[in-house]
Image 1: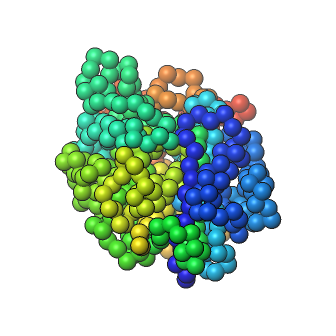
Image 2: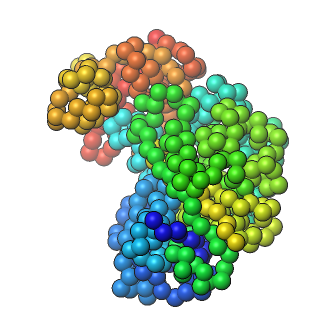
Length: 391
Length: 115
């Protein structure tokens, strides 16, 4: 296999965007091509989950490649639920690593706010098991609520820990001009104040409003290329060094230990092994915090902390910018937002930015190795990426 | 009418699956339809639960109780709860009822009460 480098990155604001989905997908590719200083690519991969259902548009990749005047380059949509973004990066990696293509564009995009939030939640809920989960009214927040309760009872995580994740990630998002949420919050304000039941109501007990990511529109892109192409750009060399992917049972109730996220553990281990690094080498990470509990649990499953101790590391401030292992400096899904198909690519965008040292006010000091965890379903399809700065 | 939810037992190794799979998760038996349906027991223990306040648009109730229950035979199932104050470890008993009404279709599933 050839080495593969991320030579260009681009992103849109994550918010409510009044543009066609194809433009939300195309705009960050334009930015990424400019960033890399190139005009053409051999192939385009578009990560998207809901265009057919939410936006009444199919064949999205054909629309995007034409919008960008990149025809006749090949183009296709990659759909893998909320892990579509990292899955599309994986496909782009394989194309370059195999020698089939020298330079490919990967873009992730979603326009979820074209419908109301009930419809958006209902759309994401279609990834649950149709007969054993969906029919009961199970949504992703409800699965996260059940998981959180089990985790709290077993490991002593409290609502206060969850609120600390929300505060940290929304603070980080204040430093990210592209983030959806620009609102400073405090643990006291959302948990202890007399207004807490109004400003932070329950969504899926014990999870409350500020434990859940927003419903966002947005797009993000990464250009992947061979070393030969990467060297010509004259930009810092960031190599996509490791990829891991693992699946788990479709139904959450079938998992032997309800508090484990085995697919996260396995995907992360594969990714680190391929990159030849260990979790302790990682200097910056973007974890899939669609719900605050997930950042804590993923930080354990990927190997940053021992199982059941992620919330203690959070208490000690180890996951802040400036801490031992900064997690979600971009604001994460919680602060930056979560346009489902775009999220995995947006995580990679942040890591490349950090490894280049171009992250401005939220720059982590000299990270060297960066890591992303993109979590599909409720942990039934997880893709982890490891990036390394080379020069 | 008394209704049941079915699990599927592999004819080769006896492993019980809920929900249905086309290939046995334990022995890999893949002769199609080599599973015997078997009604699930109704009694079990509540493992975890939530009260959902943001419901899918077609549910016309203010909140919905959902939980994961380990049934007497060790099989776990997701279901709706009709329990005022649920607690993990509570003994529950289920019944098969309509759990979702869509325009042209009714869906039946397990609804649990305190035993």
